[in-house]
Length: 123
Image 1: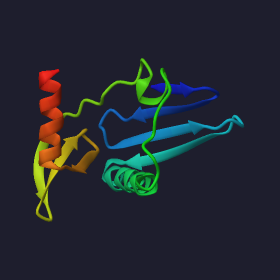
Image 2 (image 1 turned 120 degrees about the vertical axis):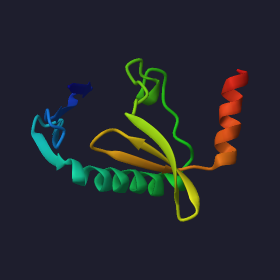
Image 3 (image 1 turned 120 degrees about the horizontal axis):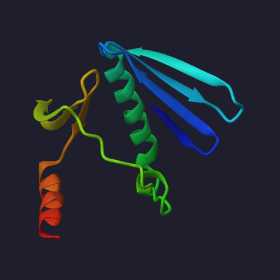
Image 4 (image 1 turned 60 degrees about the vertical axis):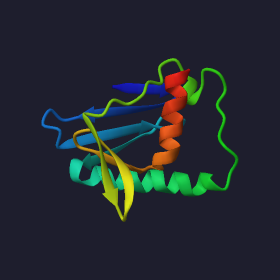
């Protein structure tokens, strides 16, 4: 699968056994960089990346996207995990999304999640 944004692109390949995947990134200069990841490494790398993004953006105003850009792009679709469950981590509920080789754990506020879901049910 190859995704393209302007002159930049990235390619994702997953081996048939699901044990190795590659992320290839092509820069504006035309150079391509490839990162090979094993499924055992994928969760810490993804978690570290998202935690760092959240840390940086916590002090900034909420990000807005132009029409047709970012999450508003027509081809931007929600991810569909293989399984979703709720676990507990340090006394707090955690939403666990299992994508096969990668497991993403997201801390949740049950009251806030309940309000948001109720708002979508009544809309």
